[in-house]
Length: 409
Image 1: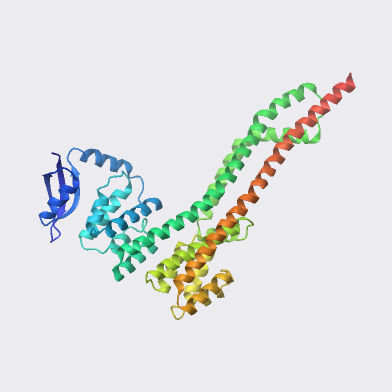
Image 2: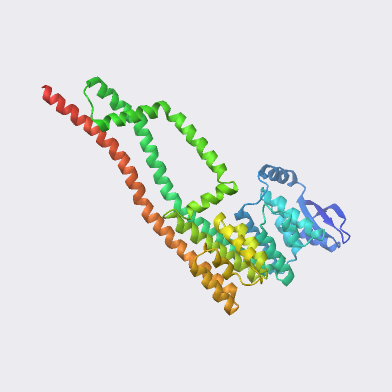
């Protein structure tokens, strides 16, 4: 029978370690609980060194990914819904060694609960992993005594947000592949193919057409200074990336995206859907309006709209009416603020926000289809023009040489 090392705490919170023989981890936990102790961790004596090494190898980040948080929230919700206590549920999840930073974070959450902290306090000690939205909803769930229900709502919320982000990313994948492959083809032609024709043209010694001379000049410049140009472009990208991470740079960039044709529809509808979904989720769980707006301001993906939400929050006077302050900024669409006003009049803001979220999620789907439908021919035309210019320039030179040879004969 395998031997296990267990760590537990008594009712006074003192740490106790020991060994026990059992068929599996669950049997160990049952034996430890019969002793009046709260199990913290259980390790197989034979597998403990390997498990420790695996965890250390996997700790390459200091936070859990969004996908890992979603999985953790789903599993914790299921365990609590099945009747398991919070401490045992966290202990069960902590003992599932995945070799990621999540193992350490979940174990720390479990230890905080055992030491007497509330679940929201334990989550708040990991701000890089659990957002203010997450902590606020858990805190509201603790007040209402409905942690498992709040966790289910969090799962639904994050699934929708993740789905929205994936739609935007997938919309950009195909155009980026077309652009990359087209650019690669052009560079190969300019650096390798054109110099081969240049040698033939030089040997014949005839005057070449203007487009051919321009093409050969571009090819020669790219061969000589291509690497330097690529280095400058890389440095420019890095500097631009740093610039847009500053407050002013991000505000300018996000404003630019909201004005760019084809892109602005995707950015705006995605941000509005995220705003409505997040605010509705918070208010449905009893988070006060002003606090909810403060959280939403930090979770929307656009600095321009985030600033308008902050300004609206400062204009809110009675703590409940938000449609007027949001409409005053004239940044959010009139349809959205009108629907919010109706929700305030009927006293059902959460339903109004759900309708707004669904509306802009549908609009996001339409904008993505328009974007991909329009961008594909634009990129194809761009690549075709560049490749066509190369082909025509070479053919013009060939025809010129053929006519020259025919005249000479």
